[in-house]
Every structure is written in structure tokens, then in C-alpha cells.
Image (cartoon, rainbow, N blue to C red; front, side):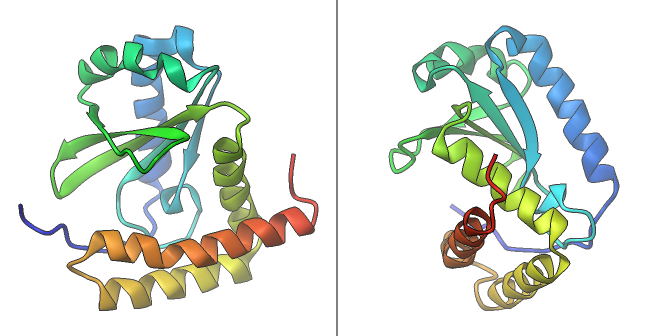
Length: 174
């Protein structure tokens, strides 16, 4: 299988419209199961460079209901990707391999997974310095791990955890 390159793009204001389009389509097929749906990841932070993939966080009552959603999501081109290492969420992707357009992360609404992903996004939206540090880290990692997306993603994790902890310590938690 071909390695997927890490390519960052300048912020695109159309990313918000892409999210709203995907949100509408998801609601049409599984709206009855959705407790919350959010635009997360770098494409949700105005001005931030990002891989041009829309990350969507979808909250459900119980992670146990996800198997019932797979077929409906497949009908709107979301492919379920089993990842045993992800205990608290399920992962779906849309688009050709290596050219994905959307990632859908399903977890229990108000779980630690849900809250941490929203908290990280919200903190970067409100703190330009943290967003700039994250962008600089991503650029450095993209240069070093251009042909190794798993390592690129893994190397961002300590920064993400640092920001989540900092945000909690500063009272940003809901």
C-alpha cells in the first residue's frame, strides 16, 4: 500500500461550508442517533494550516450503537475503519485512500474523548499563541515525516495533551 503523504494547506474558509454539508448529510441518514456533532481538528480553527481533511466529531448515547450506523454511513460514502487501539471511539473515513476528504470520529457524547477534543479545539480558537505553536509544530513534523502520517500524528499527541491539561487547569472545561 502506498504511503500517505502529509501535506499541509493554508487555511481555507470553505472548510466550514464543507463541514456543514457533511453534517447535513450525516443528519439525514442517522439523525435519530446523534446527540451532538462538532467540527474539530485544524480545519475548524480559522487561520490554521491543516491537512485539508474535515474532522467531524459525532456524539452518541452509547458506543455500542455504532455497528447499527455503519451501513447508513456507508450509503453516504463513509467507510468504517476498525482500529482496535481506539477504545472510546470509532473511526470512519470518506474519499479515496490517500486523498480523504472527511474523517468521522464517533464517541459517547460528554465522554472524556468528546470533551477533550472539543476543549483542544476551543482553546486553540481562543489562544492565538497556542494555535501558532501548534501550527509551527505541525509544519516541522510534516517536513520530517512527510511520508509517515502515523508518526506525524503520534508526534503531535504530547502537545495536544499539554494543551488539554493547560485548558483544564485554566478552567476552560465545560
